[in-house]
Length: 256
Image 1 (cartoon, rainbow, N blue to C red):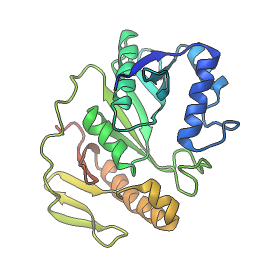
Image 2: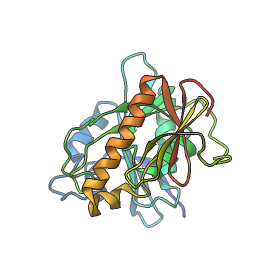
Image 3: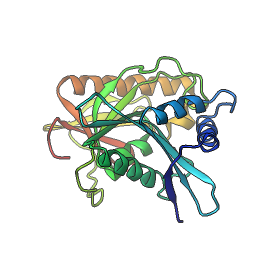
Image 4: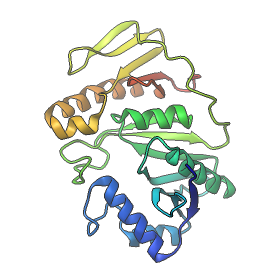
């Protein structure tokens, strides 16, 4: 599928992006998670609203980026979402954000995501080659949208080196092995240690689990939080994610 990504400046285009975010986060268009006036203000202040369209003009994905502290050479992806996960829309949007930021002197880009969403972890760590550099406990406090309601808003900060070449592929995915550190809410191992490497598992689909069994989803949240906060306090960062939901946590600065 052909995807075209462009920056959006006009009122109608930005309003469409705000409605798109409402659809993704399952909120009414009258109460979007990212109101059009906020997006327009960010764009006016020097940020960028990117939107991805198919050949018919249907909006498939969008993202908003701003810059960090002066002289930091860092940019920040305020929000990014794609309607379809298997058509390369998300990758096209992130590449557009990267190109926009690099043209303005940025060397890194950061953003946060829910560490229990395995598909997003794999995209951020494997497809883009970012690293999970900070674990934030209940970062936003209570959230009332259709995706996060009833959960605690832990987030993992991704730091993306915009100057690095794109990863060639995921490489081998060895099964987890070593000393079992913790047991997951489903009774199977949650985390392993093998020499200097840690492996931690997340649920198959936390969004579906949260809707069907919110108490069990919260138990997963607390279990994974305990592993990550302890690992990060010891100087670890997230470097990879397998297709079956296992994070790799490596000493900071180590090769993934």
